Amino acid sequence: MYEAGDRSRMHVDIGAALGSVADPGVDEDALDALDERVAAAHETIADGRAADEFGYAALNLPDRTDPQQIRDAVEPVADAEYVVTVGIGGSALGAKTITAALAADPDRHVILDNVDPEHVERTLADLPLEDTAVSVVSKSGTTAETLANFLVVREAYEARGVDWTERTVATTGESGPLRELADEEDLPTLPLPDGVPGRFAALSTVGLVPAAIMDLDIEGLLAGAGDVADDLGPSLYDTPAYAYGAVAYALEERGASVNAVMPYAERLEYFAEWFAQLWAESLGKDGRGQTPARALGATDQHSQLQLYRAGPRDKMVTVVRPRERADVPVPDPGHESLSYLAGADLGELLDAEYDATVASLSAAGRPAVELELDRLDAATLGELLYAMEAACVLVGELADVETFTQPAVEWGKRAARGLLAGDDTEETRTVADRPSYVIE
Ligand SMILES: O=P(O)(O)OC[C@H]1O[C@H](O)[C@H](O)[C@@H](O)[C@@H]1O
Image (cartoon, rainbow, N blue to C red):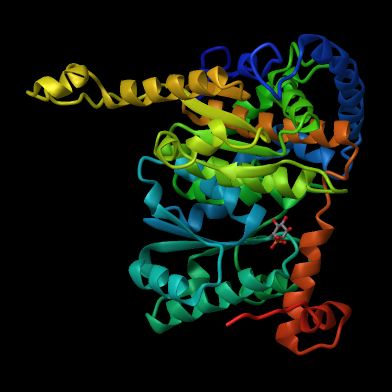
């Protein structure tokens, strides 16, 4: 478990995004000028946090979240071998990001965040339901995919003669259909944090239930996040989270409309998914916002890197890696043509690929930012998640967009509900009248 002063850290390196090496790139003068705007934005953020304003309250979660409350709520299901999260978007991605990064066996946590019938059926068929806990999560309590999947999950338990009410924990608001279902069945429930949009809720009840069931170090995660929270200050030069946000913002202003996030660790693959929602839903407003692209190192070096290095100059690449990894030595190749692998280790090879990618992007003048963790543990993951949230809020301030709303997504949710109910609404009429020009 985490102990203050004795732990690993996250590091942000913006060197490969500077104007002296990259185009688009940020000149140091421009960064100095931007730092004044960062100071003003920081004041807004600090005031918002102090008043627990909607959205800004998310940055207080490391202090507000009570890990014991979560551990107590999951106690009845804490012996489960598997956990299935029924939720979508912010109600699933944070939870999966955390277990994928920290669990020794991340396959013990599966998420149902889609209503693809074959996938849902196969997932449930493969799970030993008598030994599987259900974490159903919906902030609004009304999301059609989540409620439909929850009903399907319940029926699957019943069909196998397993009492789902004994295995389910619900995380939702004080009213709404999910709350009604939970109350009817007297399910253990966890409250939502006040004033926190779903995509900013990973460090709350919304993101921590599966991790608690799997007995992961949620205290360490919150402590790592709390350290970054405590260190937010008025200058990007002293605040790595803001340095990342300010550089991403400046690069977007200079044409980097795509932010390709490329972790060099399978355990962080979901982090890129989580980041994509955070960045896209928060910052995609008023005709602006970087398009997050998801990539995985080294796998995607062999598919997407060509485009990142030689395609349009409209991208920044965010690479992420733990500096320390498990050792898996490559066996002696016993072959002259493979002698470069002699004595090597898989992690060493992955690190060489990482270094080569950053260097090759720089050599082609393409901007990259490095996020390095001393090692991937609960505290550094907490730092990483919190730092990206703070960076996102900063970019929202600098770009003057409404970071904490998602009106475009809400439109689609209303449309889907209206279509299923057969209602005649503005949304369903728009769906009926949508453009079509079929060529067969
Ligand atoms: O937690 P819920 O209310 O079910 O919402 C789940 C998701 O729904 C929508 O897609 C929102 O835009 C997301 O921000 C949210 O995370």
